[in-house]
Structure formats: structure tokens, C-alpha cells
Length: 408
Image (cartoon, rainbow, N blue to C red; front, side, top):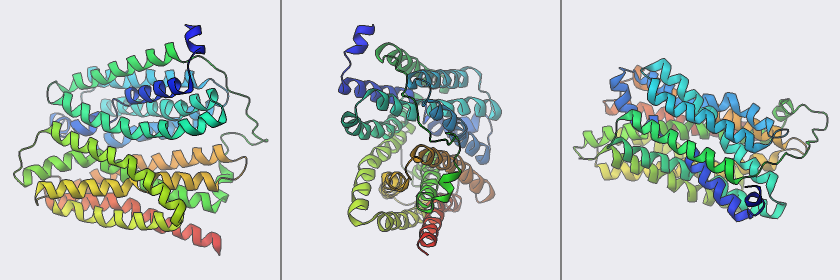
């Protein structure tokens, strides 16, 4: 097997890691697609459903600074395999033992830890094994696998959920993660990372980042962006099912999950185009315009839920495009603003705060639905999507304030 390891080309390594990421993320959308069914079976409130949707990202936030930080001193492949084990336990445990709010919270938290142990550590596997030129060519392709993995999870979960009990859907995700573990274990060779020169700063000391106003401004923007994105992805299937019923449109959950997958796929070119425009037109200006359009689309979407289902789909897809159009631009701005010797700490802060927003988004929407008119009414979904679009609104105000404060 070691001989096979030595023959892996950069293209083969990239293909294996992109395939692994798709398999590792198989459970990403399981709960979002099955939200209505599980809420009814377990008599969950919208707030409780929001907690279960959001705890996934809480698991990521808690684990990512430690697991990604360890890649400086531990082989990233080992971290990746540990993350997969957490994912297998999260998926299989949910299938076999989840029977209500608290047990679901535990296993979805573990699923979030799995994402923390695979996504960025997978990036580090590439970094540790490729030369600089090969690394720069490979990384954009690897990063795009995240959106592809999200889309595949929505689509395949919807497909499986229409044919199988919900527990079997989670078992299938666990099986995909087992295949992923075997793929990484037997095709990627071990490699210890090069010794990190931390210039006397502890790798978990993030205080210097908060003194970098420019980086902090775009990190704030990314936090609002991720809040909005994950709120949208956690609740879009439930909203589209409501919209179809409200407009007397016959549509299956599988079809709705397919639309959610398509919306995720649209985010890939939107993010690339947004990043390109930010370099040509200016980061601050491009990101600001995108966020304004995102707020407008989100504020409208919930209130038109009973109109033509085709119109709702078009607006929901457009909203997804707007949400994703500033994603790469925000991350690129953070990287550009990072000071020498602080890039790792800056990106760690970026990831932790960003996915903290991802945890709060689904929960906030659930709270608004419970406090407001509820998930069976236009007014309820109107308020829910205003709460979703608030991510871009607050991000825009805070980002511009920090940038203006830096200039002054």
C-alpha cells in the first residue's frame, strides 16, 4: 500500500479529497430535509427544530480551533480520520438512538464536530503534500467541493427520504462516511507537518486579530453572511413545502430537496463571480451592493409564499445567489488584510465567528416562527425571512462602521 501512496499525483490527491469531502458531508442536510417529519413525530416546536438545526454549527465552532490548530503539530490525515469517526457516530447514533429533542441535539453536535475535523484539515492535507504551485491550483477546486457536498446532501437526502424511513436515511449517511474513512485511510499516505514557527505567539492566541480593524470588518461581514446562509439552508425546504401547499401545487419532498440542491449549486459560480468583481470594482463596494440586494430579496421572499410556486422558486433561487455572491469576496478580503505572522490566527477567528453566526441563524428563525404567526402562515414566514436577511443587514452596517473607523 505504501507504494501506491508514493504514486499519487497532485491531480489524484485532489480528486480523492474532493470525493472524500462529498462523502463526509452526506449527512449535512439530513435534518433540514426531514425537519417537518421529525418535528411532527417528536412534537418539536419551531424553536426546538431551530436548535437542532443550529447545534450542528455549534459543534463546528467548538471543535474547529482545536482540530485545525492541531494540524500544525499532528498529521492532518489523523485529524481527518478522527472527524470521520465523529461523523459516523453522529449519523448512525441519530438513526438508532435519537427519539426526541435532547438526543437529536447530541448526535447533530457530533456531526458538526465531524465537519470541523474534515473540511479545513482536508485543506491542510493538500497544503502539507503539494508544492506551492500545485497548491495554488488545487485549493479553489477543493474549496468548491463544499458547495457541491451541500447540494448533493440535499438532493440525495430528499431522494432517500421518499423511499425509506428517516432512520435509514441517517444510516445511509453513516455508510457513506465509512466509505470515506476507508478511502482516506488506504489511499493517502501519512505525513507529519513541518514545524511551525509561531514567532513566540501561542497558536490559540487570537488577541492580535481584534486589533486589525480591516480584517475584523470583513470577519464581521462573514459572520452575518454565514448566519444568513445557514438560516436559509436550514429552513428553505420547510418553507418551499409550505409555499407549495399554500399555492395548491402538487410537489414531493424529493422535488423540493432537489430545488434546494440546485440553489446550493448556483452558489458556486455566484461566489466565484462575486470574488472576481470585488477585485475589479473594489471589495468594500462590491460586498456592500451584494448585501443590499440580499436584504431586499430576503425581506420579500416570505411574504410572497402563497403566490405562484414558480415565482417563489425563482425568487428563492435569486436570494440564494445573492447570499453566496459575497462569500469568497469576504474570505479573500480577510486573507488580504491578515498581517504577517497572523494569517493562521486570523483565519481561525474568521472560521469560529463565521460559524457562530451559522449556529445562531437557524435558531433565530425558529424563535421568530414561534413568537410570530407560526410556520403555517404567510406572516410567520415573512417574519422568518426578515430575520434571515437581517444577517446581511447587520453585517453591512458593522462592516462599514469598522472600515470607516479604521480610516478615521
